[in-house]
Length: 149
Image (cartoon, rainbow, N blue to C red; front, top):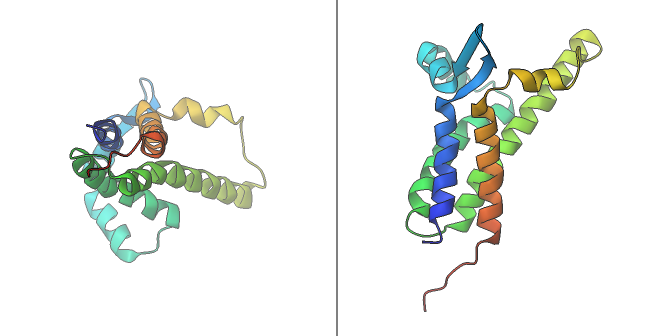
């Protein structure tokens, strides 16, 4: 049973794709699933092209790793897989934020607007993705491992 919380949190990472990631009320709301569904050919072309920033690769791979973590942790805590699955969302999002910030600074010389403005556009899917990842790392690192002997 010690793997159930890790399995649920791993499933939360997967479920985040079905919640709004961009949320501008009344104007625009989109989930990751919507984006993939509408642009699947472009997504596959970008993945095959291989010219993606490392943080995008971590982001893309976080979903299959979370799926594997969900399945494996149903049978009991598999700590290394759970920690890896939990580590990927904050690493992917952190890399994306700093990369985007650096590109904006290159183009404009500064980051326009206030720091909180981006947070206002982020939908609940982003927070589920990040929160589930961080909690998964904590659960995986702090849950006592039961030894069968």
